[in-house]
Image (cartoon, rainbow, N blue to C red; front, top):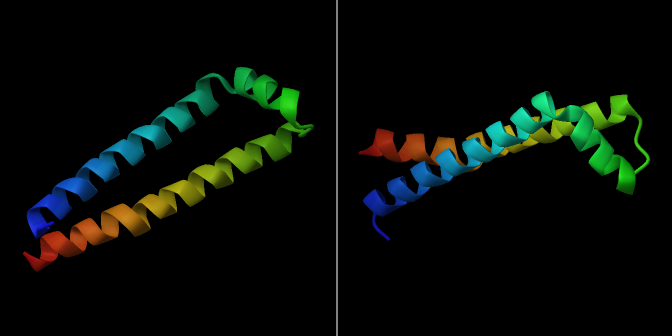
Length: 80
C-alpha cells in the first residue's frame, strides 16, 4: 500500500466514522425516547445514567476518530 492509497483509506474511514457518529447523535437527539425504551427492555438504567453513557460513548468514539483517523491523515498530508 503506497502513501496515496493510505491517504484515501484514512479519508474514507474518517468520513464513514463521522457519518456513524452523526447518525448516533441524531438518533440520540431526535429519537431519544425510542432509544431509551429499546435499551430499557434489556437494562434497568435510570434516564440520567442512560444519557451519561451515550454522551460519554460518543465522546470516546469521537476521540478515537481523531486519534486513529484524523491525526494520521494530517501527518501524511503534512509529510507530502
